[in-house]
Structure formats: C-alpha cells, structure tokens
Length: 245
Image (tube, rainbow, N blue to C red; front, side, top):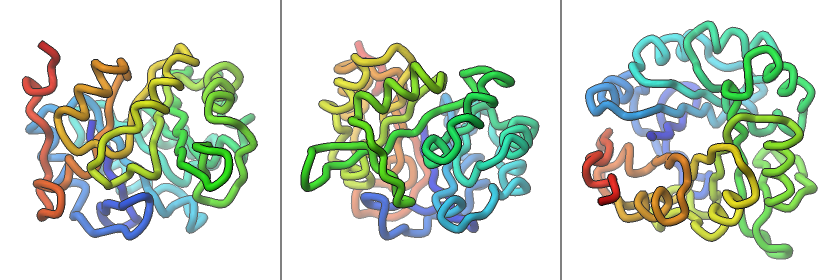
C-alpha cells in the first residue's frame, strides 16, 4: 500500500524522517492509485503534530471522496471529536503515534466506541548509540519501553487493531525493510502488522510478505519515484510480480 507524506500543502518524501522533498498534489496521486487498483492508502500529515494544528479536514475530505480504496490517515489527531470527524469524512482507520504517550485513555475510548479495527498504532523505531533499537518519538517524548514491550502494550493493553512498524533508519533509503526487527515483533503479538520503511524493490516486498509473513507492506519512495535517484513518478508495483508463486 502507498504511504504518502503530507506537509500541510502537498506531498513530500523524506529520508530517515528528514529533508522532505516536494512530490506533488495528493489528489492527483490518489487518482493514479485508483487506476492502479491499490489495496489501501495511507496518508500521514508529518507536520500537524509538530505545528500543534488540527488535521486539515477539508483536504482530507477531498482525499477520502477521491479514494476508491480503504483510506487510513494520521497526524494532528488529539480529541474524540477529531476522530469522529475523520470517520464521518470516510477515513476507515486513524493512525496514532504521539497520542499513544499523550493520551492513551482517549485511544481506549475511541476503540470502545468505534472498534479496534478503526485504530492503527504506529511504532517508529531506530538504532540508538546505547541500547540498540528502540521506539522513537520525533516530538521528543521519551518512550520507556523496549520495542517488544511497547508493541505488546499497544496490542494487549490499549487494544489497537493493527500496528504499523516503521524503521526510521531505513526510511527513504531503498535498502529494504528491517526484517529482523519486524520479524521478532511479529512473533510477539497476534494483531495484523504493516511493515514500513525502506522498501526499494519487488524482492523487498516478497521478503517482508512471504519471508517473515507481515500482513501488509507500506511503500513510500517506490510509490512516488520512478527509481532511486530519479524523478517523481506516481506508480505502484505490478501485482503479478509481487504474488508468491
């Protein structure tokens, strides 16, 4: 599934969560993904939380009305009313990240009202100088969990219906998913997992989907560039090349 990054005005792509490069208009991208019959679409507003602003509901409404596939959104969601508005607009899943540390009680309330399938917990992780790979919060909050304990907390205590496991170190590198970490975390929980961060080829997709059996795979650079180091091209891998024979 394409994972599109929105900065409040247009689509961008990052490398290791830094240096966003402009890609284009999200509506044009969604129209192309409709034609290519993608399974699901993820849109994350990467600046909403940092800028302390609400989701751009008007723009999200435009995206949701244009998308012919299930649509997941994350970024700037802070209140129950924010969730309710997004679901009314046609967003099927809301992706939460910093809200996990800020207001877990709200997440539980949303799950109680809308069901666990309506919430995706996003776990960004990276390698630290001391202590190996840990959960990472780009807004500066310290996450006092090991990766394994953190995904268990989201799954067992908060009750989210799905997890998105994203490698900060691999983001935008085209070097492949962090198969070791994602595989270990898959084995510690029972809810569906979306692998994210680093996909650069169809072989990478096969490795994460069939080698370690992730439930889904998100692609970023591959969905917006023709090739590594080349120009912008909204595209999607040919489905027949991904299916395991």
